[in-house]
Image (cartoon, rainbow, N blue to C red):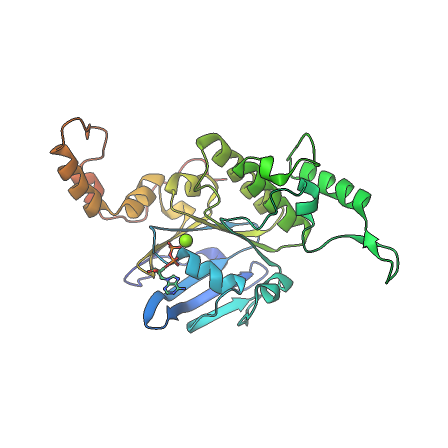
Length: 305
Ligand SMILES: Nc1ncnc2c1ncn2[C@@H]1O[C@H](COP(=O)(O)OP(=O)(O)O)[C@@H](O)[C@H]1O
Ligand SMILES: [Mg+2]
């Protein structure tokens, strides 16, 4: 685990060069907007067939991180590498051409268009020679149906406007779409943030499905429970810097949760809430539990995927 002070307690086996080279890697990467330093000195490795979770509170720099990987913004310090080669994307198209697909929180869909049409939005299938080229609607419908089914997504009717699907279903269509169009890296910006428990579960299932198809997934979330359900690696950002970077075997859900909660802050909040009548603070963890320093767990956590 590498902690904020930069000490390397162990070197994960997959850090070695070889076939399991990261598909995307950040080395000391950072980004300033004018004189606002949103991100600084971040190391991150995304491996094929693994889910890398990026956690952090609001304003921690999560969106900034994915924007520099997805070509929306450019980093102002450090390096971003794809297949070991330094890159500096100037448009999202360039990132996409290298197989890096991003599913944004506010999905870029056209709500009134059918599901299949959204599946192919911007990359429509056509038939016939130019200039009489026209949309190949039957083939698009058939392919969208097949691809969604391959990912285990069954929708009654692909003709329904995508706006009628639940938020979770729309996220799943976006994931299936990225897989179909050959993404090697899938970036998801808080896909479960606006969802209920059941829908979140469905989205987590498709994150796992994308991982099982060999994609490297960057899963942005502020929910340690969601992260721990599918994550292979956990990177916690705080105020733009990497506070924690741990492999799954090195950290328990409790430790991850404490890291996210900001132990001292939560203890202070608990103390304040205790003064308010009608608020039950019994269920909140004790201050000393919260403030316990987080270190690598000795026992491997259960349920490693
Ligand atoms: N375009 C921008 N211009 C100036 N500051 C920005 C911009 N985008 C983000 N920031 C700042 O950078 C910091 C990190 O933001 P962001 O990456 O959006 O965090 P998160 O996604 O973790 O909530 C915040 O302090 C935010 O105000
Ligand atoms: Mg954000």
